[in-house]
Length: 284
Ligand code: PAJ
Image 1 (cartoon, rainbow, N blue to C red):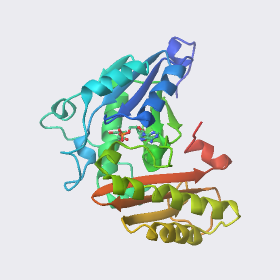
Image 2 (image 1 turned 90 degrees about the vertical axis):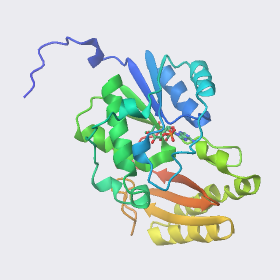
Image 3 (image 1 turned 180 degrees about the vertical axis):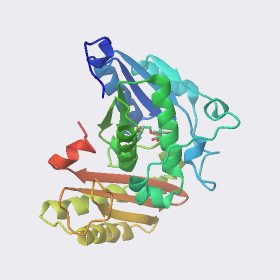
Image 4 (image 1 turned 45 degrees about the vertical axis):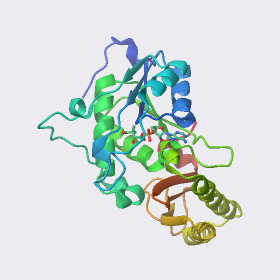
């Protein structure tokens, strides 16, 4: 039992430190998180670290885009006070051997497609939470499962911080901003708009009252099939809390997909919430 006799620490009732973890090569999506943190926190820290433990052996770790001078300029303009840009050897020194595994919500979707990915994400985010001791940490809805995993971890491991989820920032044609969009040729870039189109077709069906998962998945598959350059890896209409594929929706839906366009793997999602969801995937 913990008995609170008096408030001895002002951090218990004010919001001081905001943290925005990133892998750099920043775009408006990242910067929207920084601006949000700036508007809510006395101090704003960001990290730029292409985290090797969250990449699989055949993924794009070596060629992940990097531009530190530009990133630092953008972060300064967005009002960030402090940036951590560690080397891999500083985050994972020789003999490093402790990892964080979040069990159930990492089994499906990105977790199934990218084994070990969320172990790497949870481990590095845990380290960043310990290094910065933030009161608020900012993440994008673009990586919806990542948010669910981090919220689960923060709850399970008793971090007294708020995980704030910010809306996905999109290009004018709907493509979700991503550091990986730079890989796309002009033709692939045009084809990539099919992800958001497919999500919106399913959204319209949901809004017409459809609450079964399969017709929503089918509508997304059919729309993706109209684009010959798009190779879907998965298409999902899942329960937004358990992330299990939906039979019939009871508490909203998370529509998501991973699609290869050429060699580039893109993800996107939309979701609808109800009262229960406020707990898990709040986008304010
Ligand atoms: P990264 O892909 O660089 O993204 C950093 C943060 O920016 C994440 O919270 C992500 O969801 C958010 N973000 C990316 N694109 C966005 C968009 N279009 N709109 C809004 N937010 C967007 O996600 C990671 O890095 C890493 O996994 C990390 C959490 C830093 C751990 O290594």
